[in-house]
Amino acid sequence: MRKTPLILLALLGAIATADADPSYTSDITALPGSVRRALFEAQDLRDEGEYRAAAGVLENCLAEDADRDHPLLRFHLARALSLADRSADALEHYQAAIAMQPDFEDAWLGLGEVAYDLDRYREAADAFAKGYELAEEKDPRVLHYAAAAYLLAEDAERSLQIATPLGAGRHGEPELDGFRTLLAAALELDRPDRAEAAVERMVELYGEEVEAWELLYQYAAHGGDLRRAAVALTIVGYVRPLTRSELRQLGDLYMAIEIPRQASRFYEEALSDSAPPVDQERLATAYLAAHDSDAALAVLERALRQRSSAQLWSLMGDVRYLREEYEESYRAFEQTAAADPARGRAYLMMGYCALKMDRPSVAIGHLETAAGFSDVERDARSLLERARRMSLRTKRNE
Image (cartoon, rainbow, N blue to C red; front, side, top):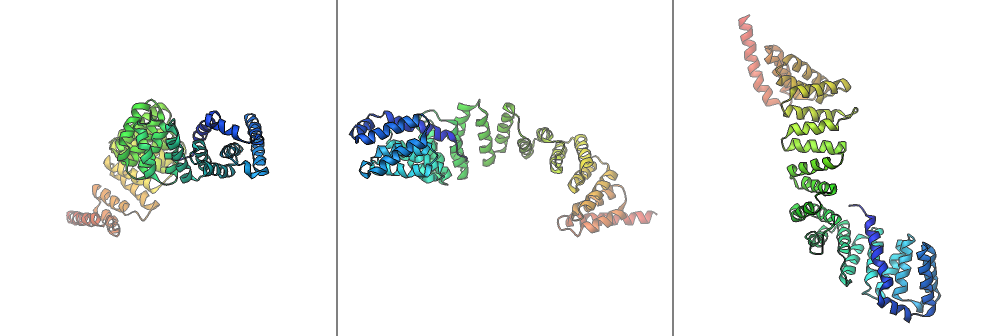
């Protein structure tokens, strides 16, 4: 899962509410005048975007007299440091504010923000959770941030515990990002079943958004529901153009669920002028499975003109054999063996073709070679007996 700036932006908005909180206003009036002036000066500088200068004013104020220390001073210093891209320093001051005032909700949220920015995900998650617990007005986005941070801290179980009620709508209408975290946690635990209800809810709420279908595709594919994954990725393709990689994945899915005609369509779309042989092989295999030997033959002829490979020649041999074009099939498997002599099946198939062409003596030589390969030995020895009988009959008839 990637970091998202939405977390930081939303938290900045949440933390900003501290300025208007009456309890903090009364605290400010109790502070020495020099501290109040420093806070107001820093606020003006911050409003002007002078974050480093604002932090400097508050740092100087704190350094001049340790007795001036106060959770509100630490909070505003931490906030200015965070805005000045000094997250590590900000974290220290948020921690100090919390140590002085453990129920300082906005300091907990600020701590979560900077800890997240520093990749200290466990600390960030705990801070978000505590900030939510302390808040009088509960913002479910904070729980989303906690769930995301626990997931990044490799605590998928805790993440899922927080994300599940969010996905169920117990804290208001769920956000799509929340579903992303929930599904990721369930898949991390290898428990896609624990996200099933959330998936249904996500499609119900966000069925018009392509991201929901992308998430459904990832969830279904990971969970082994290949038919559902194929449908979801197909719908994604209706909304936006699929990448070549996605087209190949979709073709693979349709092959896996035994709909080769659809698979061939997506493999064809995925092809480029510089497509590697493996992409041509996928397409030819799909056409073969769809019993469209003409299309398979055209693909292989085109591919072999571009680049020769043992696998392409082997597929060509299979296509020709299925079309009962045994001479052409024999030559294709001959090319296969020349390109990769370690393929026992090439010799086996040359033996088959030779028998079909009534050339038992030729078949015997290839089948004896094939019998030396463990993966085809049994078939080769069985055919050898047949070839030898045919050879004997031929000799008697001469």
